[in-house]
Image (cartoon, rainbow, N blue to C red; front, side):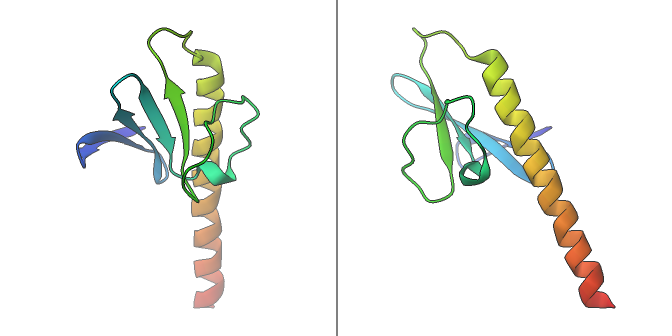
Length: 96
């Protein structure tokens, strides 16, 4: 995974943008750029406030959901990888 700092925050990429960190006054949230396409089996996402992005709020006084967050990151990376493969396949079909 690659990290880039822009727009005043940290963005993480693997086969495309995966997520970003956004510090708030009383918590930090992790925004999953393709969150609308993720399963949320871990029940980590807050109520959606955008069409595409889904957010996980991390509070300093609550237990950190490391394992569930790891699973969600893996799912997001897999989604990006499959999306990239699908684009390459469509590109090859158009070129023929």
